[in-house]
Amino acid sequence: MNYLKISISALLFTVLLASCKHHEEARKPISRASGSFMKKSADRNKKLVATEESTIKKIIKSNPKVKYIASKKGYWYTYEERNITDTLKPKKGDIAYFNLEVKDIKGNIIYSEADLGPQTYYVDKQDIMMGLRDGIKLMHKNETVTFLFPSHIAYGYHGDNKKIGTNQSLICTVSLRNFVTEGAPKTANPAVQTPKPAVTKPVTTETKKDTLNP
Image 1 (cartoon, rainbow, N blue to C red):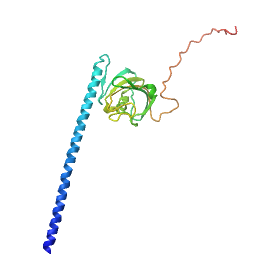
Image 2 (cartoon, helix red, strand yellow):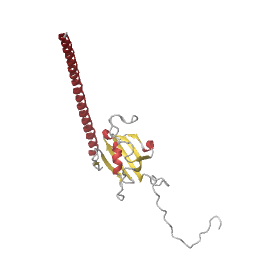
Image 3 (tube, rainbow, N blue to C red):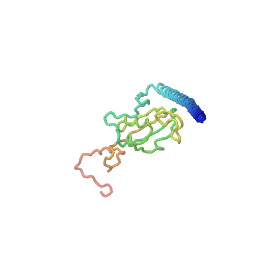
């Protein structure tokens, strides 16, 4: 009887051990496949970024009269209109008012300013294109800047599900009309520039005649 119990116990232990070994071996191909997939994906992304940056650099090289600045975030920009008198730039919590035009990398318009209308952006508090999120904070009021954005800091793999496709580099022209601190008085539209005061004409003592009633 004891021999039978020992035999049954040994058999159960052998089955359990074989089962555990089988499960351990089954996990290895999944792990290797997952690592291989991630490596291939990373390699594809590197090649994509390199290809897009090469295209952008060719555009810059083909326009030697236009001065482009390379940002630390991996995009390039040039000033169309520059404001060298102001020192302030939009910061987190400010409300930026701007106009935007979006083109593909060949210069074809995707969205015009008229299509998009006036833009309002709460700096670093809204989910917008990564490149614009950073680029707007480089600008002064009343400046117009053209940005060259690779797709990884534009709309990436998914595009915008409308007119911007997969992995599409973009040319974005931004005109920053104004920006104000969040919570500032809203007695007037801060996006509208304050008009210049009218020139005061000197007072004259001469009395003008009414041409209708002399």
